[in-house]
Image 1: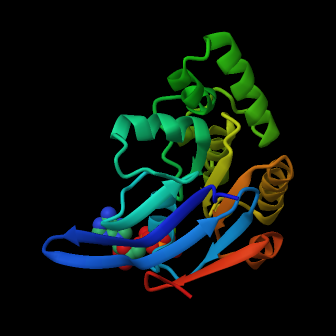
Image 2 (image 1 turned 180 degrees about the horizontal axis):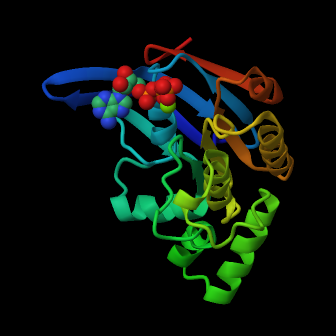
Length: 222
Ligand SMILES: Nc1ncnc2c1ncn2[C@@H]1O[C@H](COP(=O)(O)OP(=O)(O)OP(=O)(O)O)[C@@H](O)[C@H]1O
Ligand SMILES: [Mg+2]
């Protein structure tokens, strides 16, 4: 079967102030449908870079990215955004919530982009926030929430469209162990329902729940 997402000889070279950083050096990865993968590696090894490229948030410097067998190189940025919005749920390491929107509005945003009517949007966003244990914080803005609560809003937003592919960058990194375990349960049940999941983690507990571990060091998969 065709992989959900495939990276072929992917390089990512960042240029900053005349210095270039080779964050990924010829990476090959295939993610099969329904897999639950943990990505492990030291800080700065290229994990977030890898996930961003898999999530079509960034383009490789060299190499190919195929989503369900389709090379995305020739797709426009707007085509990529709409594909991302409907197909991929991305949980950012730094949350990326919009500061002026409430938790409910942040979670409902992918539905707004898709053109879902207000009433349904709010109903679904509320249900998703309840699922992550934030039913009592619907109208709070990110600055009025704790780090763990922001993390959960970010997770709810990533899951609101029932994405086939869930990419999460240390989703339990800011959570206490109980909330972390609950979030992991949520990922596990989505996995059982058929979602494909790739999680970056430093946590052995999370890694042990996965079916496959990808180890990365200095931009190379070991
Ligand atoms: N936008 C950027 N511009 C320049 N260099 C960058 C940029 N983003 C990342 N890098 C560099 O690329 C390398 C890989 O970064 P990346 O964020 O992928 O690491 P990581 O494995 O996710 O680390 P961590 O566990 O700390 O989150 C690092 O050396 C980093 O400094
Ligand atoms: Mg990172």
